[in-house]
Length: 75
Image 1 (tube, rainbow, N blue to C red):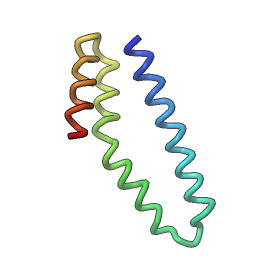
Image 2 (image 1 turned 60 degrees about the horizontal axis):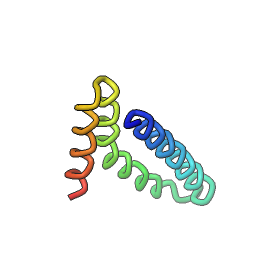
Image 3 (image 1 turned 90 degrees about the horizontal axis):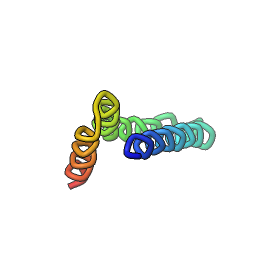
Image 4 (image 1 turned 60 degrees about the vertical axis):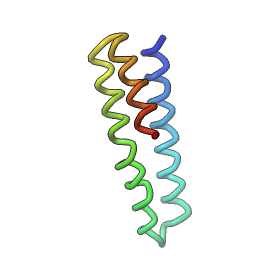
């Protein structure tokens, strides 16, 4: 179940990310500098996405590590 939860989360994260980018492109075509904001989001999310990707190589133990690192990353 942990695999499915992480997978669905990363999938929804990807969808909302694409939606955010397309919204920026539509509403701020003349203000391209605002695209730096999503880039900063990517910079902040990259470690977490790497953690999720690392999880797929492992098992339940890695899953616990993912959840722990997720919680500690927020503090």
